[in-house]
Amino acid sequence: MGLQCGIVGLPNVGKSTLFNALSNNKAEAANFPFCTIEPNIGIINVPDPRLKILEGIVKPQRVVPATIEFVDIAGLVKGASKGEGLGNQFLANIREVDAIVHVVRCFDNDNVVHVDGRVDPVADKEIIDTELQLKDLESVEKKIQRLEKVAKSGEARAKKDMGIVLRYRDALLAGRNARSLNLSKEDSDGVADLQLLTAKPVIYVANVEEDSILTGNKYVTALLENVRNENAEVVMVSASIEAQIAELESEPDREVFLAEYGLRDSGLSKLIRASYHLLDLITYFTAGEKEVRAWTLKRGWKAPQAAGVIHSDFEKGFIKAEVIKLPDYQHFKTEQACREAGKMAIEGKDYVVEDGDIMHFRFNV
Image (cartoon, rainbow, N blue to C red; front, side, top):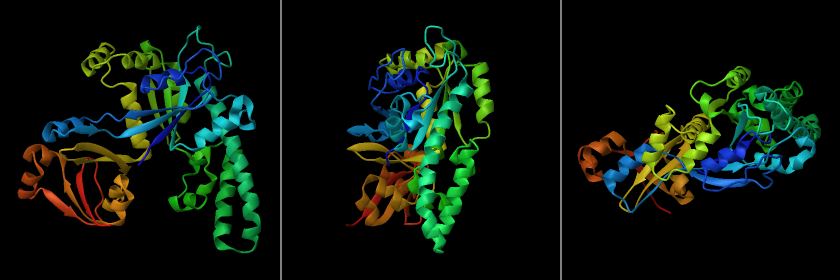
């Protein structure tokens, strides 16, 4: 399954600098608003040490990691919901992503001009929230108009949907994001066509100066306090450190560089882990002489759905899945040895895939 995260934030908070550090695509980073107009897209490999383990055992022709697509969406400003600063175009870009990565400025630097002339991460966050809420309110009002006639006729589904949409409207008018309602999946699916921006999962990236990467600062503390009741992830990153890491060619060099800052992981790794956790994603593997590959799926998916991630025909014609756990593969080294030792399970349509499973599917079409 493809995973797409949209990077948003006010102008000059470090969005494009972070994006450039994360991907091979180089978005223009400049000290003025609207530097990014068209969204830049970067496909980023998901670091996973288990791939190296499998590569060492199987020695395949190639190794294919899972990927995340990051979209660098232009900086929003006050009035974006009404089209200010090309806001309508930018908000449409956000509507397409699976999760929002909201970069918030948590550093002082007189040489980088803030669009409002001050550093206040909570105020910055609230500007973005307000613009997204106003846009969502437009969508909700239109939905209410469409539902009113049908609901008055007594149609049960329409009446239920109307109740849900009215709850959304009340929340948005109170300055709350749609995700704060914590609706059941059934209820939210019933009005999924709304595609509400503030219903999307969000990761707040606190962009700090290099000296604060280990301890944080007063701005990070204020942000954490503000979002503590939201169902959101907060990741502390220094975009300038990430930019330097991106210039290093080898993994050993990057490890040495991180160690100099007292870091074990890059901001990229932390951001990807947060994305997987927020979206409740796991990874399974296929392993053969031609290819070792990582595949992303939702936690709780069953074997046929996992097969469908590879190709829809695999899911339609699913017969069974052969499953090996990674520790067993490490110990016995080959599929045949795992099979002979009774460590290859034959699973049917009701098998719930676990993180790290090594799978081979049998199917017919």
